[in-house]
Length: 296
Image 1 (cartoon, rainbow, N blue to C red):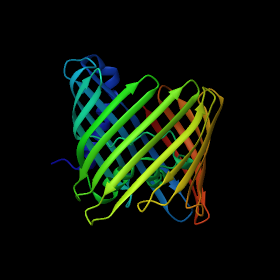
Image 2: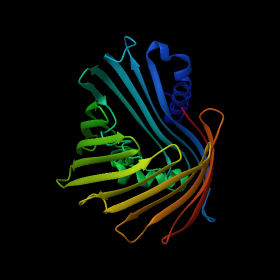
Image 3: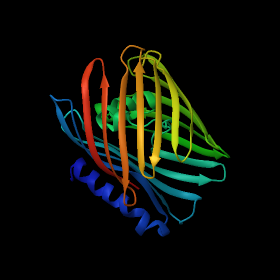
């Protein structure tokens, strides 16, 4: 059998070219591939990060049966060497899309907050506060989850709900809403987790902000009950010239250990970019990073 790393690279390559070559056959794909080098002066990491989703419609339309595939991977030195794979049979109707199998949880990818300092290894931990704790657990503990998901669009509002059970017998019920109207956006999610040891926890996340072609700013808050420390988030992006984004980010769990970041990202060609940034906190040395990547 091919190794997960090999399968990941092959699938990422196929997804990257899917929109240009086979979209007419009912396949669409989107995602990011990034090669990153970061250092805090003592520890260096070289990391290949990928996050991608592909949808296939059996009859080439936006209704009826289809198939969703997804991958999120951190390929580098331990502890950042993990891949999460998703796949689901879908059925799309006028009332929304239903997914069966191993779909992503409803809150996954809901947040608009950028990665702190553009540093993907910092973003690995950041995901847990933004609706992706099940993904973080999947990656860190090899604990995939299976279940059902619903997605619907109602004008400016997108809604999703999901029910999952992980391999470790943790149950997850998840609901998320997002709104985009003019330059304003808002989103929120509610997650309930019932662990196999008899304990449970509730995670609530919400964020609001504004975005135009030249800037984006947002604030968010997460309350983690017994599962995560409470945290607040804030970010701001300014585009002084075309293709150049300057971004500041901060995440503060428990109000005592803020992690902040600054990054600059410049677009090259169509979909490509180069990025440099720094992330820091009072509990750790500053970590500098440079990366090249591609959005599709």
